[in-house]
Length: 163
Ligand code: ADP
Image (cartoon, rainbow, N blue to C red; front, side):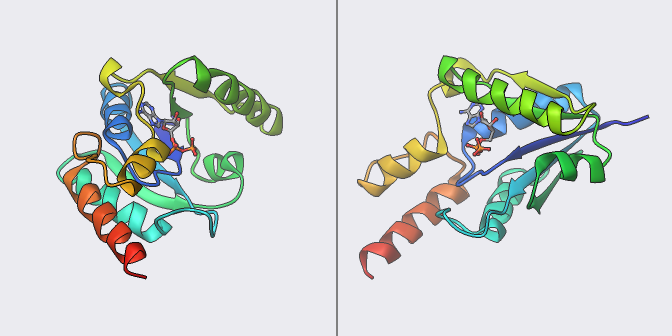
């Protein structure tokens, strides 16, 4: 029987909101594959860096695997023989996009199922893009991201500033 759940995303960078969803999913599913989208460009961190950040933040957490994927999520999920895809659902604004994606993916691949998990309220306003924006203006994001991510963000922005 299929057992694997996939949690796909950009994770640029991973936040405590992502970790909250991962931990919730692990309460439901026997194993979780965190799939980091590799689109080649457009992200602050490379897919290799994003995988490394997740691995560090999830060190010691059992039943979770992390890898990159490219191409259509439906193809990837089929290749992995996944039971379900997990997505985090924050506020109403996520709903429209997530619903559209879920129905389109199901149209592309019959049998494709998505499960939405709401995070803890304290993360319901948190997004990677907001974290990057605050950090780029010198704001402290340490309460929103794992410590390793905070350090890498600072390093990255410092390097950008110094050319
Ligand atoms: P994507 O570009 O695929 O939306 P993200 O890394 O932004 O990638 O998000 C991956 C998944 O995690 C999405 O389902 C998104 O809704 C969810 N997510 C992101 N931030 C949070 C958060 N703070 N709380 C709950 N879910 C979140």
